[in-house]
Amino acid sequence: MPKPPPAAETRISTDLVQALVNEFAPHLSNEPIEFLAAGWDNEIHRVGDDHVLRLPRRQMSADLVVNEQTWLPELAPTLPLTVPVPEYIGKPSLGYPYAWSLLRWIPGVPLAHSPALAQDQLVQDLSGFINALNVPAPEDAPENPYRGVPLSERDEKLRESALECGDLIDHDTVIELWDELVATPAWGGEPVWLHGDLHPLNLLVRGGRLTAVIDWGDITAGDPAVNLSVAWMLFDDEGRSELRKEVRINDHAVDIHTWNRARGWALSLALTFLAHSEGAPTMRRMGHATLAQVLR
Image (cartoon, rainbow, N blue to C red; front, side, top):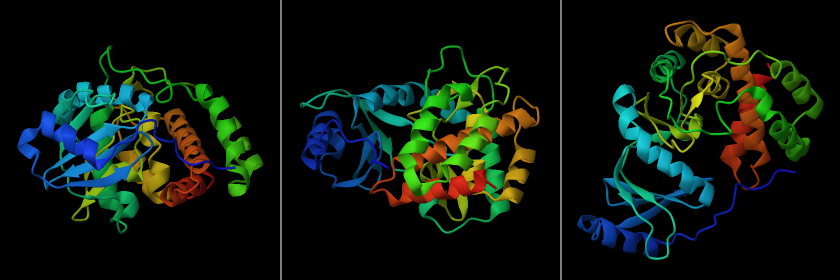
């Protein structure tokens, strides 16, 4: 049966956030602090009107946040949407064991919680962003064993997630489709930049437009199909077709094998959402919506 998202390994209180601000960003020490959200990997606390602290809550995410801090300053100028470049990198202190980031506040609402956008505009905004990522990544780009790898390396995890989903899914139908998709030829081109976790909670909307992409902890390089898996999270058949027409990978159209691998990634991620959806209604809603599109 589904289980809750991963538990925090480190308690992060408002008092701790205030103490870290006092020590490392004293110019903000008189600003009010407000807890905003706790995801799988990090907590977000707002500091005044213009800043947030992003603090890892697990050791695994502490390792990932270093990738954000290292690579986003370099990647941000190449992207058409706003991304959370660290303004300051905080050190472990006051009993808190991980590096953390002070970021500028990015206005907007997660697409998962916003009114539906005009599909044609969303296609244009999203394809422009994906195209900017779909270029060869440097050889020293961060590695991630859970993203960008061949679908076959997701096989064991997918079957485990399918069992954990219980009666939330039609198990036989899901596995039959997975067996078909996992046999798709692997990506043979150069690894491209991957956001790694492109879904409606990490896409910010403002004024009816997609304006920012947040949560880059899974940034890595690999198969561009991973970036395209979001097509099954946001669009119907027509919208997906339009997105595919607009996307380019190293100036080439999206071939059928890449498109099928993207569908496989969408299936895998949908099951991950559902398998960890206990007490997480938005995650369950995203999982069901994505799976319904994948199975069409």
